[in-house]
Length: 336
Image (cartoon, rainbow, N blue to C red):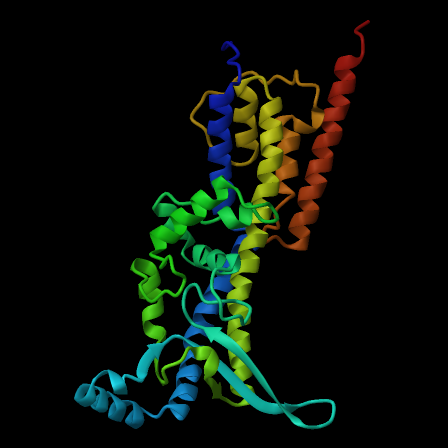
């Protein structure tokens, strides 16, 4: 019989990282919700910008843009009034106020990677960073960044750990540090590139509300809502992983022997190369024995199961628990 190997910090960290990695790759409802939201945004981004470009070109016809570019070439800076932009104030006047008078409804819409999610023109919102990190999550993970840091730190005060990882993600994405994205590089530049339209004017976009119809305006709102849903579903998914990991940390901390960690991994469906060691339950915390902890963690995610599957799984669990209780009673009964 193999000697019992005691659990230590190194072993706990290895188990924790291995199991956490599996949590992140599992096809749970939370994960699928995030991936679907990101796919829906991609569809809406292209469609909404096509509508936006039509609206912009109604106000700034191509022939006028081309004429002004000819003048700029001929007369220089005095005629430099044409620029490409990816953010616009759109407005319609089809709503009415309490007195039945027509009123203007307008908002700022930014098609860039770090564009706002709330209609405000200024940059620097954490939600903007959160979207960018979630959108390019896999690419950032490959670069050794933590794209989940904002979700993991949700509700917490700013701190050096969070700032470090946010800055690493933004640098990897090529974000312009001045927040206007005009000098962005890499993934940010590539994302923004297809979403520019020619506008006429020398002032910032806040001074030029471009007229659109109410239907067009509603399309822009739907697009911005789809962008915000990428953030909210990513937050929900990461929250579910963090809850599981919190219980995992408590359980691993309570284990005294390596065999308990191996059994936990096995109960969670994670294969390990170590030989099966003798199980011990000397912690006195029944809830955190490997079988119970595994069942608790499994219950924290909504896998795509039928109602019948869930009922059968619950019945199986209850039968196993009753059998264990009977066995414990039998062991506790003195032999005659």
